[in-house]
Structure formats: structure tokens, C-alpha cells
Image (tube, rainbow, N blue to C red; front, side):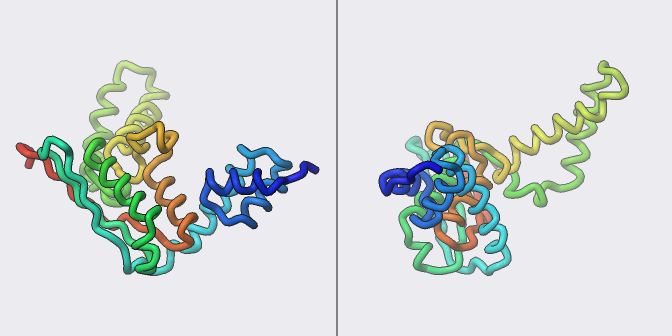
Amino acid sequence: MADISASDVKALRDRTGAGMMDCKGALTEAGGDVDKAVEILRVKGQAQAAKRGARAATEGVVTSYLHATGRIGVLVEVDCETDFVAKNDDFQEFARDVALHVAAARPLYLSEDDVPEEARQAELRIFEEQAQDKPEEVRSKIAEGRLRKWLDEVVLLRQPHVNADKHAGQTIDELRTAAAAKTGENVVIRRFARFEVGEE
């Protein structure tokens, strides 16, 4: 069994935002392997976030982002359970990161449930048509794969954050789950609006 030092625990806490005892437990379970401990904490955080998902998120912030050119603006509502968390720097930074992402990535829908069935079917027909030159047994799989890729491009929660350096390719939903784990509250991206000069 690996010796777990206080500095190891602190380093893991700084990296993940998890509690000291959770970090120590994860390091112990991982045998001192920091990367494995991070994964253990992420899984634990996702499980806890799923439990919190049923709790009402009636507090929060509306965050804005205005591009330097003044031609693109975004409003995002991110909700939580208490005004204490709504005023928390980490929570507000998460909301700002989402607003910046919406400005850059141009999502059309918040979640997969928001995608109209007609739009989904129209895209699927296009992808099936594009796969006509492929063998018949793989056409539907190709079309479904392209549909999943399209959903990854147009659904906010499925999009990887545009700042890959800061967020290491995590999707917006993974970042939301991490924010919920860090704050200990249900965190919900309620809605967004993106405006660009010249667009309707």
C-alpha cells in the first residue's frame, strides 16, 4: 500500500476541487496513482450529481458575454440550489465559460431532447442519401454515426468546450457535472440565447 502524503492529497484537491477526505480516500483506493484517483473522483462526482439531479435548482445567474467586436452577444441562465453557490466564484466562472462557448460554437439546441424529431429525421435522410454508394449492410450504421456526429455539433450539452487547453476536451455536460460535484448542488444550464449582427 502506497504512503499518501498530505501534499499528495492537497495536489489532488487543487486539481479536482473535491474534499480532502474524498481525495485521501481516492488516492488510497488508487494505490497512490494520481490519474486513477482523478478518475475515481470523477465517477463518484457523477454518481453524486445524478442523485442531486432531482433536487430543484431555483437560484442561479444569468451571465452575458459580449465579443470584443460588439457583433456577437450571449445570455446564459445557469441555475443551482442556493444563492450561496450562485455567488461562488467557481460557479460564476463555469457560467462565463458556458457563455463564451456558446458565442464561439453556435449550438442550436440545449439538450438532445430539444432537437425536433423533424430536424433529426431530415438530417438522417440526408446522411442515408450520402451513404448510398456504400454496401447495404453498413449504410444505416454510417447514417446513424453521422447523425450522432451532427448532434455533437449542434447540441450544447454534447459539444466539447471550445477551450481545449483549459477543459481538456470535456463536453459541456461533463463540465456541468463537475461543477455540480464541486459545489455539492444540482447545477442546471436552463437556457441560452445567442445574438449576432446580421443573423436572424
